[in-house]
Image (cartoon, rainbow, N blue to C red; front, side, top):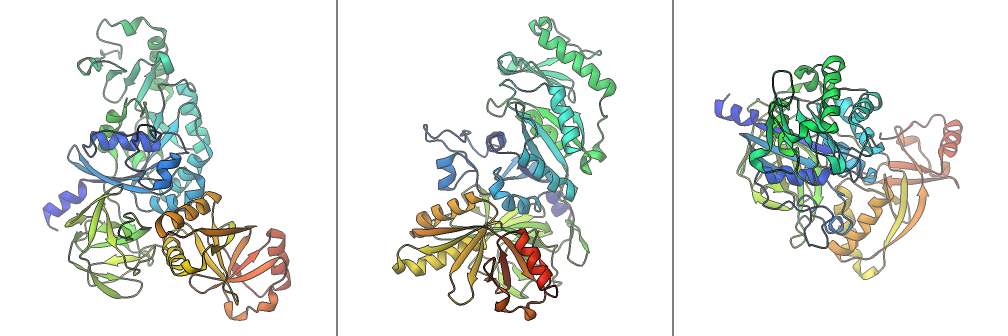
Length: 524
């Protein structure tokens, strides 16, 4: 293999930032971009009055609500590494987008609010990472506010998540009395709110402050030293192999909002984060990132990142080799070949044409309707398909129509494009062909309504039909319309496959008892 290409691939670090909503995920993303020189001024998520918005929150509804509702991709260079950050939505209603994004990364950074500890969505996303064996780095945030005791947070990590932890640094004080962190890994103390020249204080052979400093006289310093002694004697040992296998999480304390501890975290993370990892094909063949032939998979499709051009971008995680603009790729699902002339890299909605990219990078391909989520694209002679991405069974359903029938063309185009992004699922009734949308959470419908109005200039009417149990059918040829009743509805999905929408689990069991020859299944 070309040594230069190999070196480029090994420089890549691709990770997702995961957390419960409002733990500071988007804020820490901003600070990382700031250190990478990608932005000059880190806007805060909730800085609406100042007109500053987080760089990674590009969609209009995100700026209005101060939340992330779609995964963003950002790339920058730092310490001779090329970093690809995927900032994911924290809100549980967007977990499907987040789960698919986690398929495209090599490690994850988990943000934990020091006052709240492990929250429900953090736990869900953590389990997905563990299932895939993704290395997890933990940043305990908001130390500038009063929170739980650090030892209690470490204990919670181990007990709730079932993962070993190692504190890379340790807080000295908290909230208004937050003085800084004891950096166990680098052997120094980092002061909070001080001049850059005084930021780091040395420690001696015994691990104590080596200089006569006012911090020594505080009870917070004494307490921190007692905790560190306990960690040294009874805590876990640092084990790089365990970090890479996802069995031990390095823990960092800091404050993203005040930009404290973020740079130390970034530098240490880059030391231990994995380089691009192999991926398995559907036939269980492992594809090495250093393989010269280009290959990748589409984990996300986003319409209207540039509303003026009504464009669609397919996000591709490059798994192996090198991508060159103008190259011919094969879409494995159809066997068709395409010459890729329009390709892009990202800083949220800021894009520039990319001429070359390598394994570990995320690129965007302009899409005119050829691609689907989960598609594999290959540049070599041999076509293959990567493992399927997760698709979730929706739980909430609405009937949707255009308020103005004259807008039906825009209505159908908007639905078609937004459905292809994977956040909402499309169904239609058999004879009347009424459109039904399904989603994992209610907020998805609100985003859909907002985007139809803002991006397609179509006002929609949504009639909730409540939660349903959706089940697909293995032996479709044996299904008859007469099998439906007041507690079930037979519809077709966007691929023209039959789907039963049952009123509840009781109705599902009743159907299975009556028609035991019909084989039902759900997606996930």
